[in-house]
Length: 133
Image (cartoon, rainbow, N blue to C red):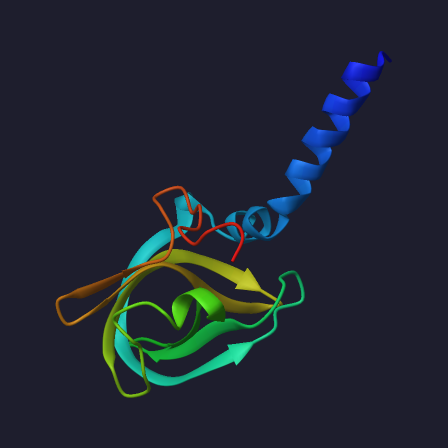
């Protein structure tokens, strides 16, 4: 391998590592299972998922049919956005329904509270938060 090729390979590898948290977040999203649900927020909390770095904001949503966990995104991002989601809020969530650690959950792309929209992911599940904060 020529020296210039080796350097370019190392740079590409290092740049690739910086996107690992977003890659994991995107891998947890399946555009084929996207649905929209609405209900009342029973609780909201910061968690530390095994595959992700730092605190993430999750909530429990009571719909007409079920009680389901909803993953919003990293706390450092979600907590700076509007609308602020709080317990007892009535919201609508569009996201990917997945089984996470043996439990059904929604990985949110959009959350609507009243006429305000909290956008978390694009249509392909790619997070909208900056790769570095």
